Length: 138
Image 1: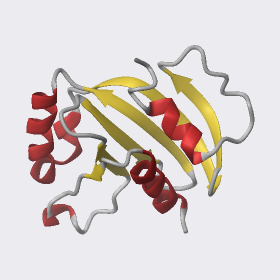
Image 2: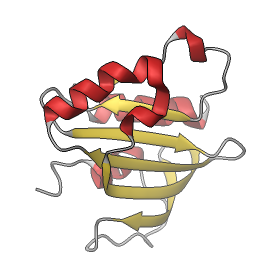
Image 3: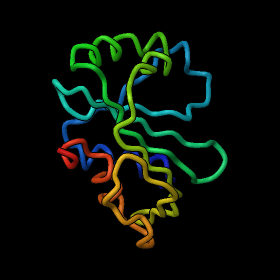
């Protein structure tokens, strides 16, 4: 299993109510480096997974929007407009990391959480998801 599939599956497992947003067929020929996930209904939060396209270096963000209604409107626009639909989201937490394989993630940088020790070696996918879980910061 490649790193992208592993991370997408970890998101879907950790956030059991989540669903991956899909682009329209207009974008089908483009190589996709960005993945968006609605994590729960009636929530102003969206997960954004970015792959740099060359190695196993990623960025995972929890984006916050003004309201659940705003996010719902933007999600409806996403299939036709693409990633630009989510530009008004504000990062709540951003994690830059390298994924070496299943449950082997090495955090490079963490923004938005000041109490977390990121220099603890490799972490699991579950720990990575806990970093970006908006419920953890409440």
